[in-house]
Length: 150
Image (cartoon, rainbow, N blue to C red; front, side):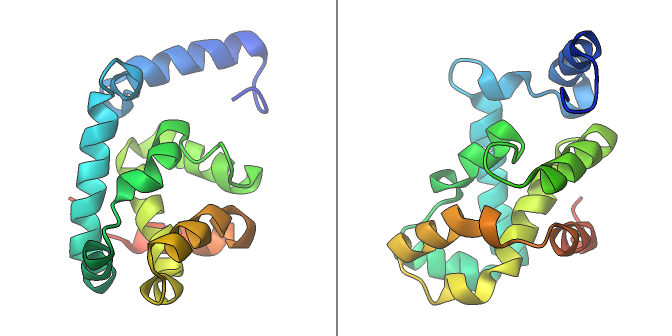
């Protein structure tokens, strides 16, 4: 927000983001991180629905979305992904709420599905850590918005 808004406006936008019902992030940072835990469980379920072969492979390998997506969700992808990408994610998040975060996470995994299916736990985590250096933001966002979520 500070990249696009004066400091005072950025602060008040953050207050709204933390408190707005449709996209409240407050629960992600409270003790116990209730919302984060719930969102990661939802992501695990969405992987089983939208990328079932990968979901089964990860089940066999002992991989859970909490091993990599906690950072994605708590930072809304801003920690390690390129600014061009995170700006688009934040714009969509402000417009559509938390559902966008799930769509983007699934799109990132779909984009790397072939390589992830050939990876054991260690290689999969290395590949996921390297995603910020290899993604094409427009491709990921186009894929994200083709994913239908209820």
